Picture 1: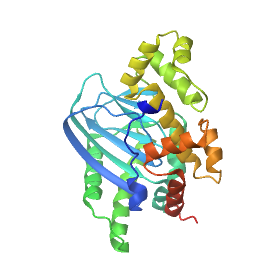
Picture 2: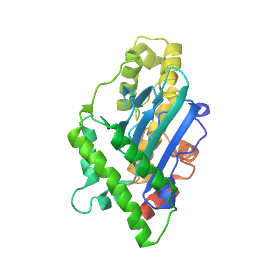
Picture 3: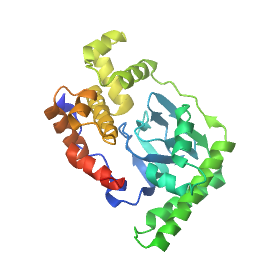
Picture 4: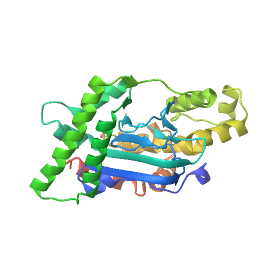
Length: 294
């Protein structure tokens, strides 16, 4: 199982910089699709053009220009396409739950507002051309703004963030939400749904294939095509992500390892280091420092 794990670390920009947000606009003439992944902050993803499908947990959405997705912490997501993406244009804003609470100005708990919205299975809405263009302008302003500890400069950054979030919140109230999923491979989506509900339990390729009436080779090929990850890679990734989430509690690292499906702590330690780039104990220290805990 270990040999199949991708050797890349999970980005931790928000935590490392300590400012609570990250903004980026990008345009690519040609780009490969991305692995299914998740993170411990919100991502507000704005698709402008060039994408084909957007995978979110067990669903697959046909992408339209100016379509916005609200992804809560630890939601699995990634791009899916039958061909390499061409003239792909997007913008995104990553936000920590703590910063969202600050930006609500004690008028609205934005963290709870977005959690309530997405908990109903609704994650995406359609922006107007004008609103999408304005959101891109704000994202590019934030992307190019240097990180500063000066209170007045940070206040200016927060003002831009609040303008952006106001458009999103008004869009949630006024726009027709997009809830439908485009079914491209119902069998693999059923497999994915099952894995997402049972990944802390022992899962074997031959048992999964037999349960869904498919061959191991078909399962392996189609799952990797759908998620850009092997089945084992996906399962272990989800276990490590659950461990990251549980580290915000007071549970011991040993208890977290076993509850996430690892049969021994040394295996958990090895996988966590490989995917996160640091030990579980160091990661816990970082998130406690970021959250202002001792």
